[in-house]
Length: 390
Ligand SMILES: Cc1cc2nc3c(=O)[nH]c(=O)nc-3n(C[C@H](O)[C@H](O)[C@H](O)COP(=O)(O)OP(=O)(O)OC[C@H]3O[C@@H](n4cnc5c(N)ncnc54)[C@H](O)[C@@H]3O)c2cc1C
Image (cartoon, rainbow, N blue to C red; front, side, top):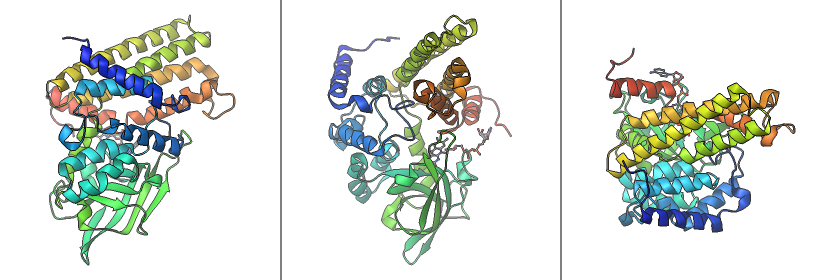
């Protein structure tokens, strides 16, 4: 296995770095966990999206025929790594850009591609994801929101929850049941719903971080036209699986965790706990885990470069990094001692409360994009060949 990068790839890395030096203002850097913070300034996130789009970065991985740069998986990883190292913020329309636009490229009608893709990338239309429901999260096929044909339209009724960015989104890509009599997976359709209509109400959910990143969506006779159904009615499950393929396909978060461990070591030194045996063991362990994660990333990258689909190792990777991050954050708040119990916005919080915030946010990481238990089920069945659990 060759762990090095080619000369061409290093040239590309330099291109990304140079562009970041010129285009990412200092005050936009290091805005939060992995470049993400729920209370981040929306206009900054929008401005950053515009800059990335104008420079063509948002289409980096797209085929040249689709107007992209046709970047290899290694180039995409280099790009993500440099963004993480520079502390770049997360863009406002991240769900539309990373999940919906590539899905529409494959499954969208010519009208949908023409109408939405450029506007999703530019941030003119911001989408949220309306999949989860109060009784349908891990078991998504249990969703109950229904869509019926009435007077030549689709009419939607039901409730969605945990929808990130619902309160500032213009549209939602949403799953609803269109055929109650069909097999659970077959009776579902994929809709693009206008969030600004009277039949749609968003109620923010307040989180323990103090932020209100996501919300509930109530649909009461919300109307969708035929042209906003993606694929055919009944194709929703297949298209949702395509969306998940993009969600779990992320590469190279290694830089983020290596930085976190370096900051953890600095914190231990600054707080005078660097010589404490327990702290030293935990920080060293975090360093080892972060390094192993880089090697896992490189192995995944090698496979992706050879054209292999991610398969169950995507579950191992998600499980590994999300559980590791929880341990890193827990070590940090432990080092802070009683200061670790302060709210992040307390005037007495160390380093602007970033570690307490990071600890709280890390609790979500083992839930979204497939919880740890679900990832372990997949590994047990598909890697270890164990029988399905009851
Ligand atoms: C920060 C964040 C952002 C999110 N953003 C969005 C969004 O934008 N759009 C959206 O649609 N959803 C979003 N979600 C929702 C997310 O997809 C769900 O939280 C996730 O799928 C889990 O579903 P649930 O919360 O209903 O938990 P449940 O599925 O009810 O699970 C509860 C517990 O039971 C465990 N469990 C469930 N089934 C099994 C099983 N078969 N075997 C073993 N254990 C099991 C789970 O692991 C978990 O511990 C977001 C979630 C978070 C935390």
